[in-house]
Length: 357
Ligand code: PEP
Ligand code: MN
Image (cartoon, rainbow, N blue to C red; front, side):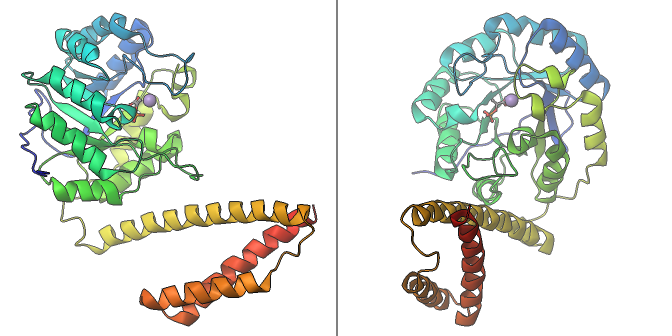
């Protein structure tokens, strides 16, 4: 498969070409008042690109699924009154047609949609001949090929003003993030397509207001190009994603304090490598959490069958197997033994607690 993308500059009218490129606005367009109030506040703080979901992909039916076409004139009003460019999510050819007809400046494809090649192809076909910038969010699952594939489909349809949005990936075991960043994936995308802008969405990644600032800083430290952040005039009462939206003035505070470093080759400085280590440590903690959870499930079984917690043959098997594997991977056998002794002892402690409960 051809892995080349034909990228042209986003060339966004009235938006300076500098890092970070910021797109801000509510998760969803709820009412005309909410849209206009939020938009005016953001524009007064210097935001140049306004986002609002018109069609909202929700996991279950019965939640607020967006106002649909009815909300498009509100975005037109934002454009007319504030001069900001407006962006919205499209998930079907119908959405594309309506959004283009309404003069929406920037489209993005959401994480659930970019996971589906049929949907992406249908959107790409409907975009043929349109000269509109399109951002592709990473698919919900951590699959860089699927993300690449979606970009290729749009590119093959003639869309060259392309960008990617990194919003993190679904994970069953994450305690900290709503969607863990797995930074190595957007870093790999950047390696594949160096001229394509990649922006970070700390709102959907963190799922919490207090994570927006640290994730945004990490995105800047890693050299990503911009940020898409959810901001709402009354976040606590938002109809979707209330916990992760911030007031426009809070967004202003966060952006003001952001340290924007010069973009440099991703893996060539120690701080970039350290960020990768941090990312891997996050993974390690998630994996350990998962292992302990399974170990607690085993304790329930042992309790039910009146078994002892420590089964020495099983313990020796683990130490031998992982010790040998460690040596093959270039690690010291003693070190691997110590790691497994420590893991085993915590697991035994948790199992004893359950058996006696
Ligand atoms: C959104 O941007 O509001 C959204 C639905 O995001 P995602 O597709 O990343 O879940
Ligand atoms: Mn949202």
